[in-house]
Length: 493
Image (cartoon, rainbow, N blue to C red; front, side, top):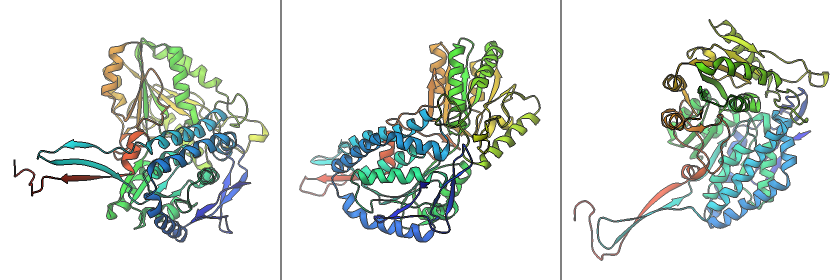
């Protein structure tokens, strides 16, 4: 059975009688139980993190970085084990599951180096014999609420910048992937992180997550999930003026122009639309195709989608694993029905649960699905489905493609596939997204660059890169006047 436990103030706690059941999405079988943490567990975890803050925040940042470097080494030694756990708890195919772990390893090594690079700035003063500078300061206890679709990577995106800045952490992972979060914290402890600096409370968002967001001793909240929940998190944190980062949904578009290499375009679309079974906020769910290649691309994409191999993620040769839970499957089915009922849209392939052998009959699988002749305002072109479903939209030229691309409430990731440099440069400037890919699909972020979006995708903050350091630290401005007298800025000129 999968071990999902709480870790509070140096003590591990197993699930009790009121436990959360965990399932293998490929079979539907019970694989373990997680504690159902609530306000009492959150209170204890926050108290432990508060108590650990003075010592951790005054530990020299390079020493904090050394611990995180060791974390990378520990995770490398456990990569296969962690990858199998990712597949077991949320269904990713093997390469993606190992990639999820590799992203956390990359983040550990990258952030470790930031322990020697927590830079401030110096700048000239307008007055003589005076120095101006800025310093980074830790903030306090950080509440981190992470999703199931990147169950090792996203906890690392949030926790490691927080830790290297000198903050302490309370992690509330998704109840679907509590074992992955438990294993991640085990790796942190094996690397040498002191007791109380990181704490983990398993539980639901309604109970543990809500208690963490509303806790008065948690000045920082970082949340990844749906736009609807992100609004609730923001509203609940606002009265206490917390630092809040929310990373939310997407309805990402790939523009394909007439001069594109269509075989490459199909590869990019298949990866973007069906990677992680479409369960990525960056999934390519809208394919915006210029009229001259629309029919040919559709034919090639249909063949590619039909050739995708669906099955248990850890088996050889599988392209698409299960979705995470029955309710996710039901949501995808609902949107396929909506698409079929919308005037003009045409279901080209997929659209249902595949026929699988008896060993996987209880799993939560959905066929790679393609809709054609979709118009920009249809619900399947506007609303996030979070499954292996993509929709083709026909446009006459680049200007119309950009207008269609930008015509959603979301703004996370956008892409263009063309051989024309001028078109690529125009799209790079014009696409209203936080991330733009030229000659690629919509997925494939790297940890040393900012990750995040605009509009309904987020609230202006970014994860990873130096922007992760920015969010988890305060800037302190320092003025040093050695003139020997009182100098008044803006007055004594």
